[in-house]
Structures are given as C-alpha cells and as structure tokens.
Image (cartoon, rainbow, N blue to C red; front, side, top):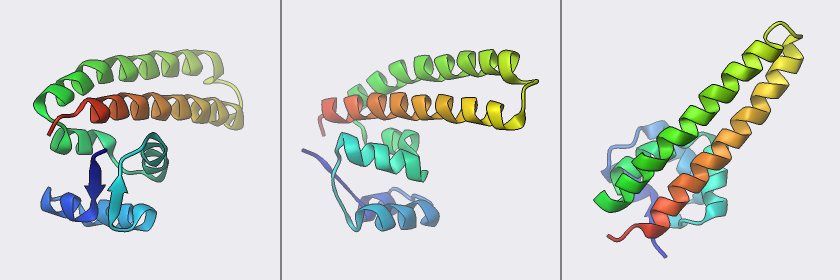
Length: 121
C-alpha cells in the first residue's frame, strides 16, 4: 500500500493550510485508505490537487476520465434541487444541498481511491 506524508505535500508545494490540516488529521502521514480519504474530504483537503501531483500518468488519466461524470451529476442534481426547493425555506434548501454535497464527496472519494489503488509509481 502506498503512503502519503506531510513531507510529500510540502515537497509538492501544497499550501501551508492544507499541510497543517493534513498533520492535524494524520500526523506525518501514513497509508492511504478509503476511510482516510473520506476523513480528508470531509475536513477540506483537496483530493483533486493530490491526484494531479501524486498519481501516475495512467492513474491520473483514469481519475480525469471519471471525475467529470461525478461533477456533472452533482451539477445536474443541484439544478434539480434549485428548481424544486429554491423557493422553499432556506433551511429546507440547505438540507437538500448538504445531502447532495455529501453524495458528491463520497463519489469523489471513490474516484480518487480507485485511481490511487490503480496507481503504479
């Protein structure tokens, strides 16, 4: 299993806030797991940035092929929520958007992790 470390982030010129958040969550780093990817996304770490810097060309190509479909599904669903709940109470709209964002994050994690596990250094 491949690892990701705070030092790798620093060497790839990650912004200090992302490195700090990474350290808060994972210390100096460790093996990349599905659970850790979920934690990372929920906390605000940028998996797309990591994909662009740490995946092999083949794995990145798989990620780049899958990601647009995930984003497109999110945007389409957002439009549906806006059309349906845009005139509803703010609380109802925000609840629907929170559920949608959680689904998007889960899909993004799955796309990233699939590419990461297919990654050959």
